Image (cartoon, rainbow, N blue to C red):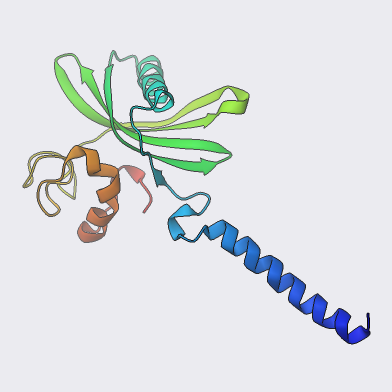
Length: 170
């Protein structure tokens, strides 16, 4: 090869490699980036159910409460050094049923799970709860929104209301 051919190859090769890496990282859609939150399609998946039950059990140990797990309302996952599961769950506290947002960090290859947050969803700046114009968590931000859509709709609500409750990043 001539010197000119080497120069062209040295210019084109890094561009080609970079474009392949970017294309693979984007997967054709912005939402597929590593580290972005992705909705959980099947909330009844045994792994999701097990993680939700673990969150309630671990919270009960740490907070010395006696919550009873009922169901997973919505959820998202985030690939990190393992997987974060951000779930909205329904649990019974005595006779009262409440919704909680929890994050559990899981590394299955190490048999590792850690509860990183567990907070009751309460009424706040964006009308979280039932009292501000509709049924469900997002009632105050544009009408009734079913609980099943809470994680998928929350970011739009936060943008309208100008607040981000419970430390969730948008």
